[in-house]
Image (cartoon, rainbow, N blue to C red):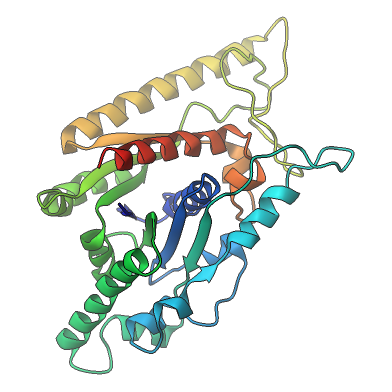
Length: 329
């Protein structure tokens, strides 16, 4: 049975696009047929992760000028290339890696002003235009399942309470509410969960919290106690503040920094648990902040390029939980 997952957030900058793209690539690597759709209508950014220019867009299908097969790109060869070329040994010999046994298709959204206007129901009687667009969106989901045998449909949505965000949540059976552990995000998430998510879960949708950039693992360069933080594989060309080296006699500054990190981690855990309890949503994933990944200039799929990095391992755990939920249905 296909699963349709929508990634949503109260505000932008929570990392939902990064999480959606990495999860889609990982599920494909694990053998599933995955369709990743960019429905962040106002600021689509999936192209940054795949560096591809489509001939037709999701907008074209929704406007009735293209069929499903026209707007989904088979990017399996592209992710295979990233995966197999990114983990060469120092001698240039390819390390032994598991094969990518699934498939990944991606549908991109056109960010041109006139295309956004059309998706907002412009150019005709607004109410009737929006109803027709919604019907086409529901048809897109149905055809991906019936005609293309989808295992997973993953939708990246616009943040906040917007027309297409609500539509994406309405057609999904699993809702991932993504947030960072800041006061603004937490309070906004509470309000949105109370006002919106209850309506969807009442009709059978499952909703979960995805905590991103959780503090406690962004290790300053001078901290060297390996017992406090796991070893992080550095990204080449980036000065990683998360990579540590062993030391037999940690300095007072090291001890102070470690203590601060432990306190931050404890505070994050308390806030996360309190939020989950307040809005009655389980936390399905808590992704720690790794500076060498979070502050790179160019976006990339960590699960393929650096599969041994702890950041990628967080997605392994998330994928396992998602597969477990689906297998019970």
